[in-house]
Amino acid sequence: QVQLVESGGGLVQPGGSLRLSCTASGSDFNLYTMAWFRQAPGKQREFVARALPGTFTFYTDSVKGRFTISRDDAKQTAALQMNSLRPEDTAVYYCQAQWGADIYWGQGTQVTVST
Image (tube, rainbow, N blue to C red):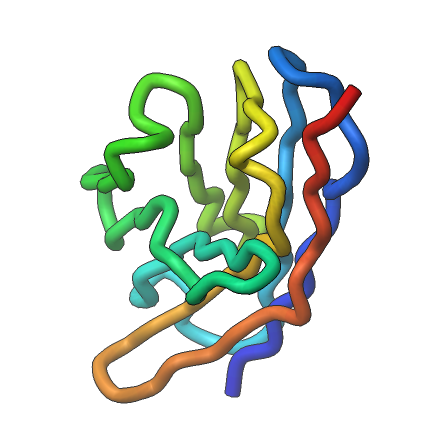
C-alpha cells in the first residue's frame, strides 16, 4: 500500500548538517505516523524521531535540539534535518510509515560523520 524511498545521506564532517528526505507513494499519507530510525554497525535499530498526523513530534534524547522531523502531506514527504552532527550519529537511517498494524520501511540511506 505504501512504498518509501529515502535520500540525502552521505559523508559529512562533525558539526556539519544533512537533510534526509523520504518520499512516499500510496494513499492516505496524511493518516500515517512518520518516523526515522537508524542502525549503526553492530547495534540494534533505534528510534530517532517521529511525526504524528498533525503537529506533534517526538525525539530520542540524543538528537533533541539537533534534529528536526517534518512532513509535507501535500507532497507526501517526510524529512529529517540533521544539524551539529557527531560521529556517533553515523548509521543507516530508515524512514517508517505506520497506521495501526500496517507498517512500512524504506531501504535506508547511509550517513557517515567523520573527518
